[in-house]
Amino acid sequence: MSEHKEELLDHNYDGIQEYDNPLPRWWLMILYGSIAWAIFYIPWYHFGPGPLALEEYAAELEAAGEQLGAPRAPATFTPEQLTAAVGDPAQLAVGKKVFETHCVACHTASGAGLVGPNLTDEFWIHGGSLANIAKVVVEGVPDKGMIAWGTQLSSAELVGVVGYIRSLKGSNPPNPKAPQGNKYEGND
Image (cartoon, rainbow, N blue to C red; front, top):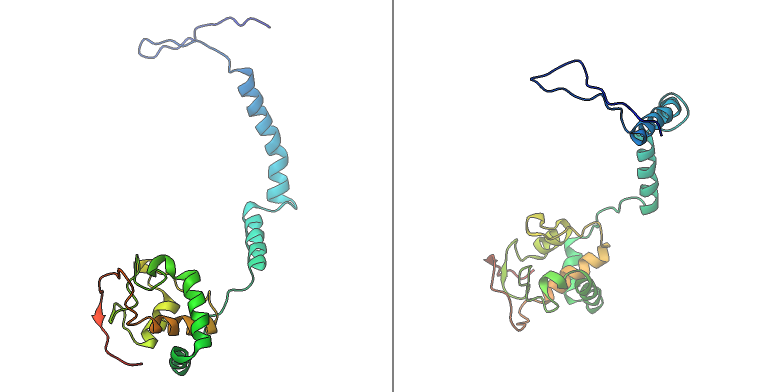
């Protein structure tokens, strides 16, 4: 190792003088290595055949989109299908399975309500008609934390779960959540 003689610099700032110390070798090696890397990197990626970061990102997004598939179209159904689901045991079974899979975390298995409202009483926050229930299930209620299920469930599953929710009305589960919303007295 060579010894470096520390010398004071000529200039003086407010009575403070500094030593003329060289930078550490490891720091200089990082600096010179970065410069050498840039000599090859910039021409290759900015002027040559190498892809830019934005191009790589776009390609990765496209690959992820292909892997996930095309977005699912929103489910469609008619009011007649909703009405028919209320009395159809096969559709209620489908709806019960969907309810048990996706809805029990907020509404409990009995529909008595936990985070979400009680689905067994006569009171409804967004209306108690089949069309209103379907609208809430399909579009969700983002302000209340309910996600939209319209693109995640099939039409048959949505019709079934709306019918199942309606079938819970008047079931009187133990420990139901207090009524919320307005009383619905319709029959549809």
